[in-house]
View 1 (cartoon, rainbow, N blue to C red):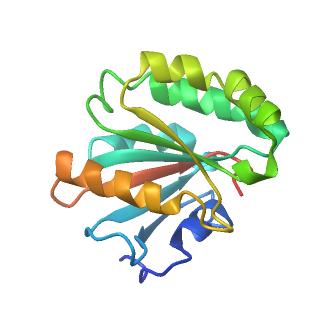
View 2: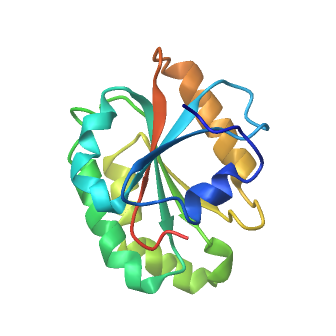
Length: 170
């Protein structure tokens, strides 16, 4: 059911996977564990919680450079945070802020404030925010290391990492 892994998997995750259905894809070859990502687009965000019980971790991808999406991202994150003590309890949650290279430090900090990331990190210890570039691969090895660690610390037979993507994640 999974597509073959290749180095473009994270780039594909952030750019162009359909947002109206789920897609399961294998992780790229530089990840040394066996795992799958299940992409759940924003169009089916009401169904995201139905996948949480079978996942090892949650990966949320947002386009941090798209100012028009900051409010929507904050809304999605608030909805996800509501499950931190139930369906996501004890599971690592990763926010991949893609296209961070397109912002200067001041704008990046403004994005963090608008999306409530600093406060959310204080209130939700299992949340890790990683600034990445799917295009030039900046930060993707750190993501792979974090996913590997999560899989080792939270084994779940047959589970997948759930990758939720807000509208406009590119």
